[in-house]
Amino acid sequence: MSRKVDVVDQETLFQGYSRVRRYRLRHETFAGGMSGEISREVFERGHAAAALPYDPDRDEVVLLEQFRIGGLAADVEPWMIEIVAGIIDPGETPEDVVRREMLEESGLEARQLEDIGKIMPTPGAVNEIVQLYCARVDSSNAGGVFGLDHEGEDIRAFVLSTDSALAMIGAGRILNAPAIIALQWLALNRTRLRGLWNG
View 1 (tube, one colour):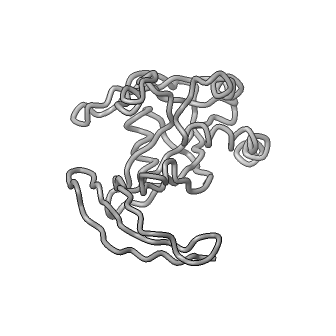
View 2 (view 1 turned 135 degrees about the vertical axis):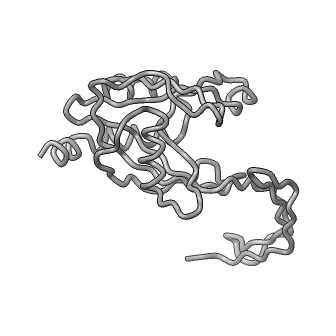
């Protein structure tokens, strides 16, 4: 059931590659009635698609490592462990993005895609929705350095057993939300997926 939201005003504070907007609004409360007027800023960067490259024959995943300014600003390790991801441009489908980014960021071909679902990594301040997939790949020759120079990308792709990748979550080595969610989804669906893709 959708609750009522009254948007009093919205103002663009910054417009570049991304946009920052300030909303003034009131919303329906759980106790009944409407809240007082509140002000919130939202970072609007567009929607994205991401995929965990998985080889069901070898039971291996391909993960990426790259520098992220958000990690530096948060005073954590700025070289983040991630999965393949990219912004959805106008006219592209999430599947188009995953297949393009898979080649650009890892040199791999997505042979099949399994839909994991949609997530909002930071809904308290960002409007981004990420469509997640698990992508069937051949990891036998995976690994290396990838990315587009004109986008300032320097991406290391590396192969791990699925169990080793899951252990990295437990050890706190992976902070990237789409990567954690995709790997945990794989942990729950690995047997079914291997049967589906090896059949």
